[in-house]
Length: 220
Image 1: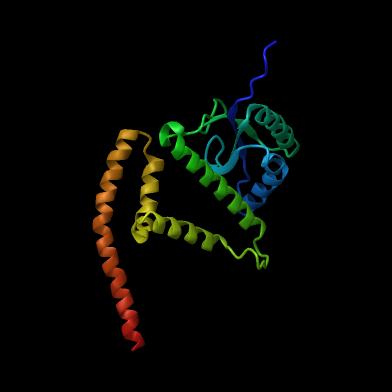
Image 2: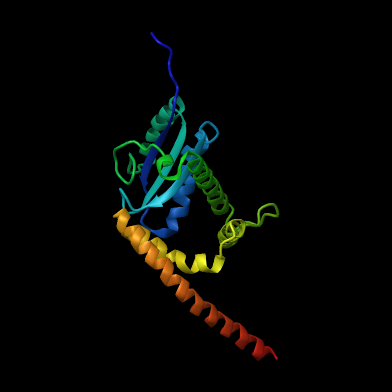
């Protein structure tokens, strides 16, 4: 028999989460403690995202590592999720079928490596914030709001982009991304949005300046 070849691969588990928002955080922590913690240090990378497919409220968890470890993890998570009585399935791109192969084709191999690290760091930070909510900790003073603000502000500063403009346009831009499946139409509308927001942003800044000036005058 030939030697066993251990290669790298992804595994994606889609887990149906509770419908009420108040239970979401506790559910996430439970999955993290029961499954992720057991393999976090044995895989190359992991992250979670919230999706609306294949279940209306889906916790998507991805793991990447040696095939032998990933196969073991798949069997382990399947047993644990059955014990927890969760609806779940393995699959890719919002479906209960198919293999996930990463997104190096879209971002380039080096670009995808950065995105993987961002996804991993964001997942670890989110879990840490949730677990420490309501607790006083001198070593960890990051709240959810501060973490979001710092994440956006610092990276915008590093790549030298206008932070207010980014925040001003992000919500509408994200809506377009999620609503248009045709890639050509998406890029067309995205370009139109960029031009529109440049004009709207000028008026937005004038409005903010008027508020600041009004506050200054009221203080004198």
